[in-house]
Image (cartoon, rainbow, N blue to C red):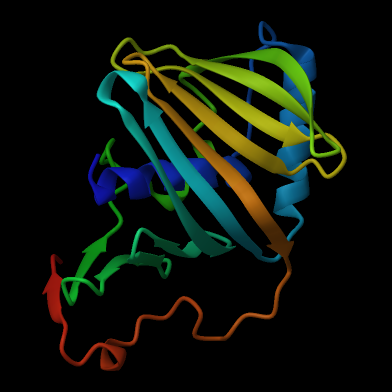
Length: 220
């Protein structure tokens, strides 16, 4: 799995914090109520800073890896640091900064690209394409984590099911587990969740002067 795909999966996880859930009456009412509470709680914050752990395993391929990252989000803008790459969205363009290669790729956010995770998708990703159900309640390090099970309705989706863990007390997302049809498992866990932090006015502004020796690939 290349870095671009992993970055998109992390953004999928981040999108959970900004979705507007619109579940049908056929879905579990308890699941809907809980997800609505999560959505409402998150929308009340001016900004969110998250530190997370990303773990992927696949027994068939003898794969077991872990990575850490962090992201700062304000409205539809964000700065994501993951696997040595910084991905920033300033509201108009996406900047992929790769220090290892001394390269920066600049592109417009294409909301019509199904393979890209855009701010609009962050607000609507879970609205359609999933069946929802109430799942198990776990006690994790003294915290009560309620899981909601999401099953993709598209046969093309390579995931069998997704489990979203929600802290009952705070109504914050604790983790997300994606179970692949190939037996793989991807777990993204929130290690730190801070809100309404003081941010620099240039937090989401790309400054080319900071990267004098970088090759800049402007796709637009």
